[in-house]
Amino acid sequence: MKSIAVIPKSTTQVFWKTVEAGAREGAKEAGVEMVWKGSLNEDDPAQQIQIVEQFVSEGVGGIVLAPIDETALKRPVAAAMQKGIPVVIMDSALKGEPVKDFVSTVSTNNYRGGEMAGEQLGKLLGGKGKVVLFRFQEGSASTGQREAGFLEAIKKFPDIQVILDNRYSGTTAREAQSTALKMLNKLKHADGIFCSTEPSTLGMLLALKRNNLAGSKKLVGFDTSPGLMEGLRKGEIQALRRSKPQEDGP
Image (tube, rainbow, N blue to C red; front, side, top):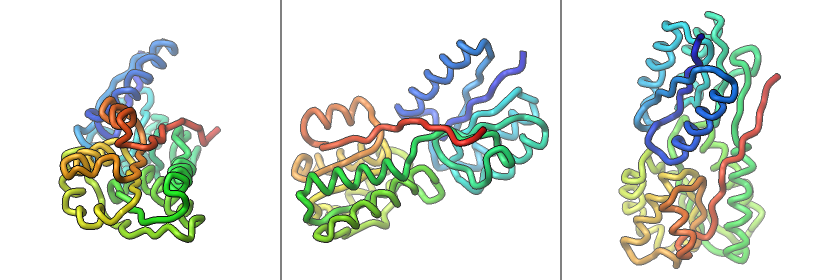
């Protein structure tokens, strides 16, 4: 029996551990073998390319891939499809067309998710104030769409000013905390903050707590983890947007 390879963006974040649990359950229900393998962090497209190429050379029955970079993974995916190995893209987009370049895409409507986050933050601020957008990583299609949706929604509030939108958190909470601490002057003047991923939200929360700012800023994040849910219960985070899958393809 051929196996299906499932390749996440990383294997360490809470979000990807829940994806793994779902993939294993789905494989069990379908009666197929599932192999789970990915990079440790979401900043290594080269390693992810190697993983895809490895599974292609092994001749797996199919691949489910969450691309770290929407462009860099096009070539190995094309090689898989040319070899007759169907590839389904999950979570984050890959440049190309469903059916032609890959079988289909299953992901959150990330743009709408970002819009909803912006709408919620605008309401929390009463339609006025200063906000910071804490981006995730260049080349990440899913978070880029969330960030674009957020900025579009904030335009609906003419009395809200975006005072910073060009800082990238990095792929871990530790990196995000370090970057957020370097933004401290802007954060002190901000009334609200949007973070587009689990690690960036947690890193921002830790930076705010370290400077006694947690709870005084309206913090809206994306995805969940035990640490983020605790922050939500304590009032240090005001809202979290969760991923909800949809399918684009045949």
